[in-house]
Length: 214
Image (cartoon, rainbow, N blue to C red; front, side, top):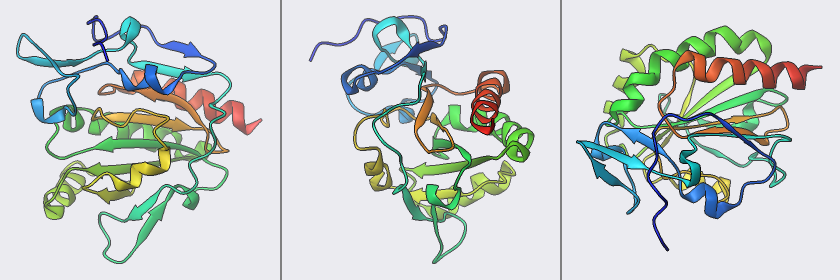
């Protein structure tokens, strides 16, 4: 398969009704560390690694939310509590923000404070956050990340990324960090393929929560 053309990392968000798996497989984000890459789509450029998509999309919104189905089966062991399982189904009728992260990933560390701020500012609107910790074979290091960054929401511990099979290959999972926003029916409403700022995420989450809450 041919490589998608390289484009600027930060672009306007793109609204789509239906985006195919092939489009979503060619995703875009600039990351500081090579460790945040997967697959052969990394393009070395000036000391960074770029993942590119047609049009350079790093923000994808679904209006209406994706009709590919819900993600109710996404579950796995709680990172911080042995013997406990955490699942999207733990948050019925809530907007759910899913963040894929690793303690080895520089952009994940950079966005952690922003995610926590949005979590705190939206939880009273019926919004839940769920992290998925990936490719961290040493659980204690991932737990230290949560403690050091004062993360208040749970994460699934998924070093092998098996939990992500619940996405069925319909949404991007090869870029870390990735953030998905689910509506109250747990359909994918938005995808971010980049490290986030508060102003990137908060307006989208509030809009989806308000629209679904009517």
